[in-house]
Length: 80
Image (cartoon, rainbow, N blue to C red):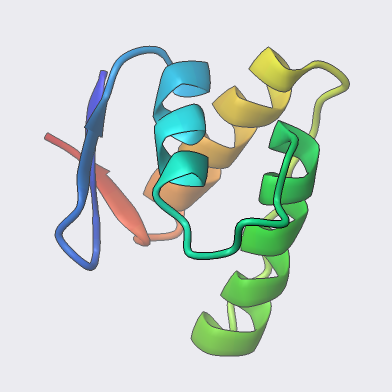
């Protein structure tokens, strides 16, 4: 899978690999886990984009799959 965020950044791989790369490119160094990163994305989407994302999952893989799916569905990213 390959996605492009609205800002132009491109990421490819499995959803977990994509989210891990997204997390690694963030300027917030205190974000250590996938869950913390997903929570940060949820807050920022609500504050900056006025979009509420619905993320479900217990494992990193489930959270990543849900996040990537929601970003695409809500128009914050597209599959390329």
